[in-house]
Image (tube, rainbow, N blue to C red; front, side, top):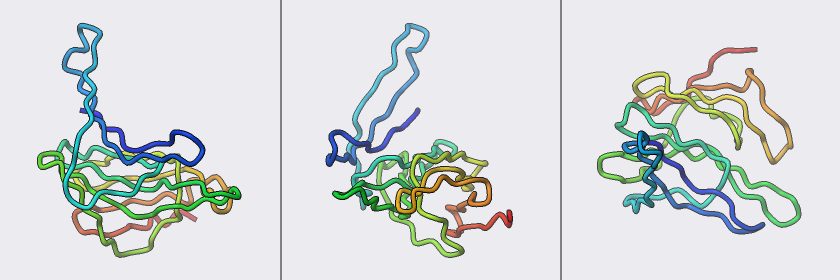
Length: 150
């Protein structure tokens, strides 16, 4: 299944809803879409975050944020996991070198509990990020990993 989290509606309207897209009937040119109600400690409403499915066991939510009045961006580096069986959110307390806050980045599961996060936009400084700001989070050991890229 593919999951989608949050988003932005009007100028100051942000969402924290979770949707599941099932491809089971793709051969009939149909995709089932369902809003999922979750338990646990849900993430705040935001847009531009990544939600990465990790081996259909859990999904990792990272980044995103909200634009505030006056053109300021309020970034979010809080990281959450969504248990895909219990549909329950957990906010992670991570150690290691925390990455630069970002939105509209890419994230990919490297296998198991490792998620690579790269690129994106820092709305606070209005900078786009390159390979030197790439990072990996280990959701099992609860640690950010520095890639050592100059």
